[in-house]
Image (cartoon, rainbow, N blue to C red; front, side):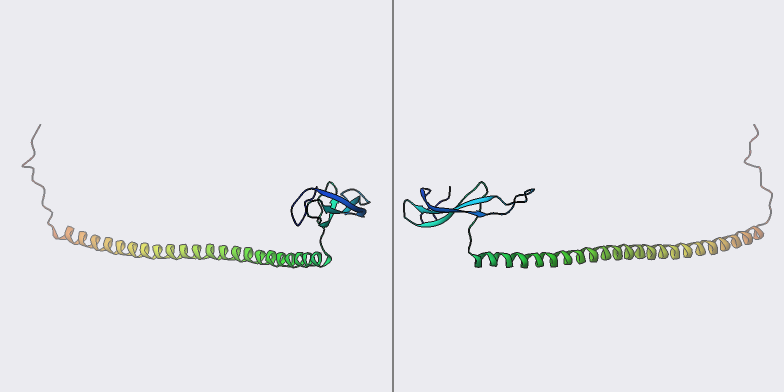
Length: 157
């Protein structure tokens, strides 16, 4: 049961009524009739429309209904615009992720190239050092006389 819009009382006396056509329910070709009545509040005497149905309906002036329709259309268009912007943002995010991965791999390549250069320098240094030590060893082997080793510290067993 409806309440009075002025005082909020639930004591309403039906003054007059009529049947109207409502929205068709799902699966039904014909819309069910609904009973609309003009009720009168027993407390304050105000008259207002009421709907007697299982579903809850709201009676609204045509101008207000048109405002709601326009607002819904505006919100739908805003929703579509937001969805397209969201798709653009997702595409941009994927592009940025791929560029981040590319930069990371390029950075890793640069690090590996620098390590290669350092290792190459170390190898060339070690080769030159080996050659120097081999020359030094050959010079030292030529400079030391071949003296038979003395066996004075050897003990016989």
